[in-house]
View 1 (cartoon, rainbow, N blue to C red):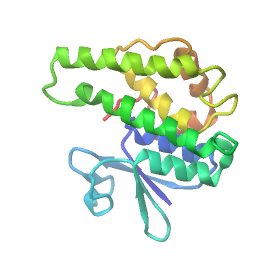
View 2: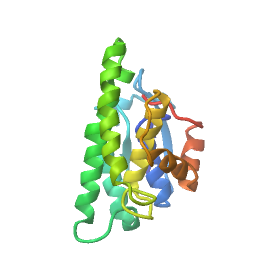
View 3: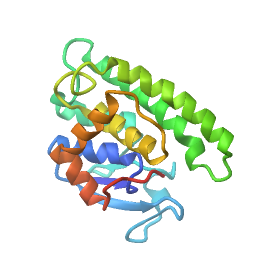
View 4: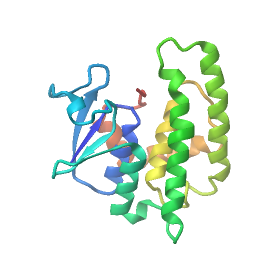
Length: 200
């Protein structure tokens, strides 16, 4: 199994999740500007969408998109998802919110030519979206005392906020520190050569 990633990009969430689940996998770095892999291959031949993440299985199948990959990881290790009859759907709800409302909200910060007004407006929207999750973080992690795949995704988004000077409402700063202390997170950051990731 191979995870195609770019250091500090949203693929860091999948990298963390695979380590949390205890998978043995290879990591392949992708240059998102040239669309080539670290060994010179054309990344569009692996993922025609041209962005990360992509998870390639041993049989050659490729799965893309954070929501899909993180859901697959949680299916392999149910401890990484909320329990109960609604657990799977609560996970999808959280992943969809992080992906659609927070992740996509950072676009102006990484778009060449975006104005300071664009970034300010995006920052205001993101503040409200982070506040929504912060108000629901009643325990150590999104679904209680056990970290799951959604926490890795939220963690990466919090790092992006910090990198761009956006304040995180309480208790998210403590959540970030808690995540940074996890062995799977430390290992993923080490593998990507990061102490504080830069998004792409």
